[in-house]
Image (cartoon, rainbow, N blue to C red; front, side, top):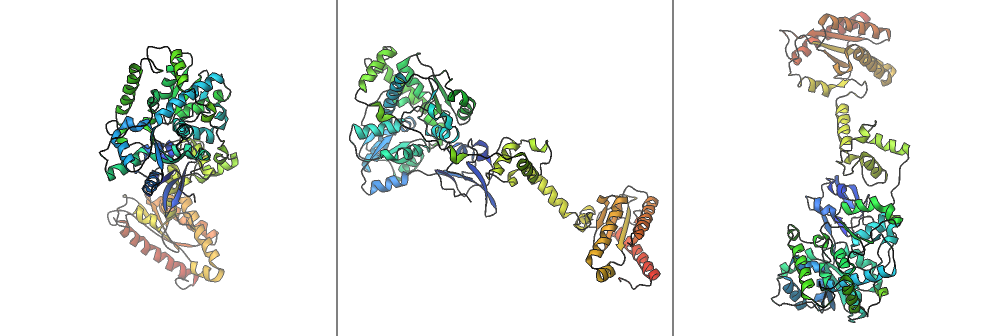
Length: 594
């Protein structure tokens, strides 16, 4: 069984509703398991890209995530030297509380308050430098760690198209190490669960130790209480604060490039991945006309990050805050690289002068092909047919129901998931319905003879209390000499007698009308047959069976004014059958029940 111990994991609230499977874009990241008799959708940490789509659809709050908030505050309390890198999203969501948030952290022992917006400006500079030195189109931005993870895991052919530039967080950390000579541990405060993956990938740089999500931070600070102290960030920045917007990188590049380069923005958990899947071939061949495609996991950019507080994303206040700041920077700085009165080329010249002491090589990054751990295996036609059959899908129609109740879009996807061990046929509603019908049929069918059993008779007759349609012929039949056959020739012979009797009765009256209600007893209900016809057939059955060395005693009665309920009919038919059986024993000189 998979150990659910990744960045995102399933908690005890899971009821196995499959909603997470339906929104998960990474085949096999959500795995159906049975735990203590209950379905549990676990998360495979090797396949999960931390897109967070499952959080938005789970009505049971069954998904949780790990971050470093608790460890950060424990270490801070021990006197560890820690500085924080603060995402612009914190300011965008809490502009009126921002100073107190910084003041509280500073009062608790944080040494430096470094804005990631400053690193975003460096990130923009690095993009400009790289594009100037390497003229090619179809580059994919790398600022979203979730998109990077998706490409590394499921589209490794696109790795050469990933912009080899560090994101704003790492740009801030690298600058602080190299130019500010800060040796503290760094803690990143931001909106993204997946940012931890960016932290892990850069462990050799020893830059960022803690990933603190905004949701966890605010929960902790509210429980503790905010300080009345107000603190400020230690570095100034330009349009980097606008990076969390869905067009943040594109707007920054256009500010310095004008319309010279075409930058495409694609965002949203469904749209971004479908766009990548659809255009993977064009991108890999270098035929995409756009200079850069800024692909983001979250529809509204980082301000809608996977670990932000839901209340902050209901309206557009955060987006408005960023836009208002952007306009302020553009109008207030009339002589610097943010001046609206300058041309893009003039701004770029000033911007490059501002960053002249930086080396592009310090802010480059590499990627890893992790697709080997995400391979899906394709079943052969024979293997696929076997899986479909195990799901009670025996024809083309049943194999293309595509109801998506299992979470997958098609029955073929579900079949493939079962083949790869990601899911189980019990999650298919068609299977469950067919299985329920099969089990119900088994519960109403006699295993030896294939006719209906006593339970079916009780259901059909309301436990004998029901009233049959007028004219119904009620027949009792009992196999003669069954005990003698079992005793003298073994139970195999006795079983043969029972099967032969059931076969002939079913042939004349229909299997659905014949019930084996005891060891050697059968009941036949003939609701749509005249009494004379039913009796004629009964004598024919007796004659045919005798030719096969099988004898049955019978008794029949018709529902009329004298006999109304099934129970009364049964008593009358049983009495008639008993007389027939006694006559059989008398003719053959046998003792009753012999």
